Image 1: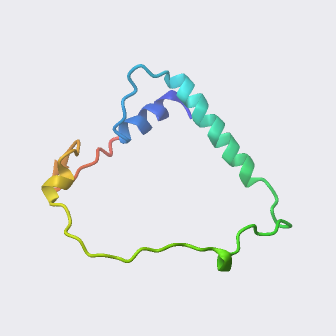
Image 2 (image 1 turned 30 degrees about the vertical axis):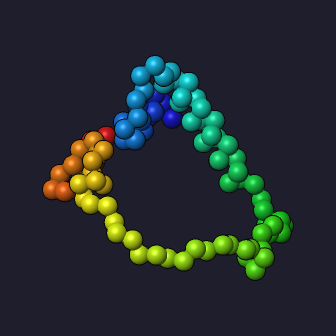
Length: 92
């Protein structure tokens, strides 16, 4: 990943790069990407599963119908809207 890709990610996420070292961020992203690539090369064919679904005790809550927020409330902090929807800048 290079600095231009870091800038693109931050722009798409509406995050500020002000005061940030894009070279350092690119290096950190690359460290994570390299680690993930290493994980995919590990042979796990002989490894037993460590979690058994029947032993999993998920606690579920009852669904309760509640009034939703209004469209105006949902869009109140949106950077850009159009026709009552979120508008995203797809210019890459």
